[in-house]
Length: 169
Image (cartoon, rainbow, N blue to C red; front, top):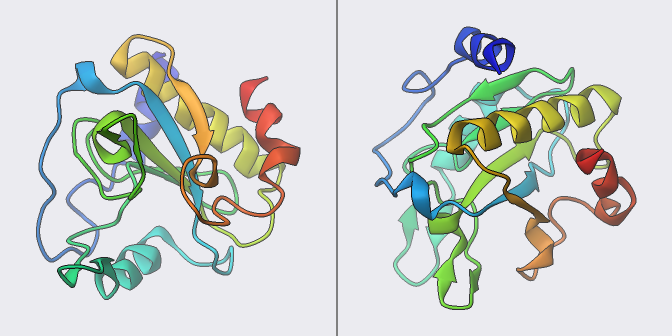
């Protein structure tokens, strides 16, 4: 655990990424799972470029409200580096899904890998470490899902079913 925390403190970009506002907070006790996402972009983009790009996107089509900041708590780049973008208690807008009356933004941590096909071995390792970090910090096991498991989307990629089990190993 200490290694994971110290590693992420060195890659702590909380408050350092482009933003136009802030998200609200949620109680850590309400976090029950992790939702895996992908950027559907070139794997060579940086977390800063992803954050900047999301600021121009509409998050809520009914209100036209735009993302105030990057939508994910943790982001894994093309070489497996984990970027800590928000506190775990930050209610990021990573998923519009609502399951059994509970919004995934309230109950799940959004972890995203940068790319558009399938995560490479370094990214799989980074995703595993990001999952461990989230579970260690909420002090309990969390369920794991791909965004498309609960929402009509291709995210986290068309091959999710092929590599999902590697995250659980």
